Length: 225
Image (tube, rainbow, N blue to C red):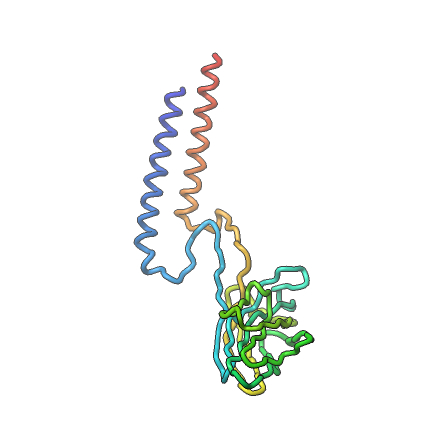
């Protein structure tokens, strides 16, 4: 009995190894034509970089909708989310002021009342969102933060998609960007969501592991006898 079960486990293990080798070859063959697409892995990590634009002396960087990190915010339709960005005033002499932010993807946008307001002094920057997400390219540039919130968001504000947002500056004027929505944290995937090949490999791996366990139990029983 022990030899039979052990042989079964070995055969299934070899089958699994062969299947893995075939699958790996398929991945190598498809890697060149699948660039830019989401891979079928056990987890999906969203890496959505913020958009950028230049208008007048203002450089907008890392403009993105922040994925909710607290219960105060919600990505569901009708919810409230933060807008993250950094606006650098490159002028060495003239100040500028962010006077308005607008979008069709929310019922309204609230800009927090901060002590420094939304005026951007020469060679300084105005930022919104978590500070860790909006570090200036030059750490020597003074950076002040405001809280900008999109209220009553629409159904189009979904992780991985983009929404149109317009920034209006007193001196530099208007600039519209397609702003990406953060996809948030690592998302686990169920076996049912995997490709048929991946699901089959997963099932064979479990079967092989079960057979090995049976072999160990059988050998332990024979030893006791």
